[in-house]
Image 1 (cartoon, one colour):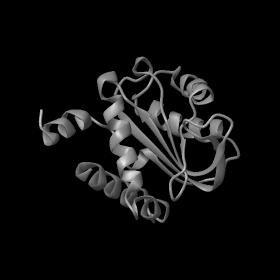
Image 2 (image 1 turned 180 degrees about the vertical axis):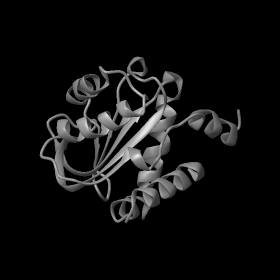
Image 3 (image 1 turned 90 degrees about the horizontal axis):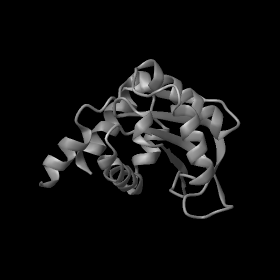
Length: 164
C-alpha cells in the first residue's frame, strides 16, 4: 500500500466537522474537557456510552500530554468503545494539567486536546503518528490555538492531515 492509499484507508469514513470542535473551553480538570468532547462524539453516534469512562481510565494509566510548542493531549481509548472513527478537538481558555506521555509523575499545562475515536484498531498507531507529525510542524498548533471559527479549525486540520 503506498502512502496515498494508506492515508485514504486511515481517514476513510472519518467524522471531523465543526460541531466536533469546541473553542474557549473553561474547565479545571482533564476529566471535564474529556467529558465535553466525549459528549460531542456521543451526540454524533461515534462512540458508546462507556467511551468517556474508558478514556478517563486510560488517561490515568497512560497519560497522553505531549510537550509540544503549545502543550497538547492526544486522549483516546480502545476501539471497542468506538462506533465510527472521529476526532473531537478542544481549545482551552486556560491550560489544564495532563500527565505527560512516557514520563510518569510529570504534568503539562495542556492548551489543546484531541480526543480520538478510532473504530478500527489497526489504524490507531497510524492516526497517532500522523497527528504527532502534524504537532511538530512549526505553525500547526499556533494556528490551531488562534483559529477564529470552528469551521476554520476543521479546514486547517483536515488540510494538514491530508499532507502529513
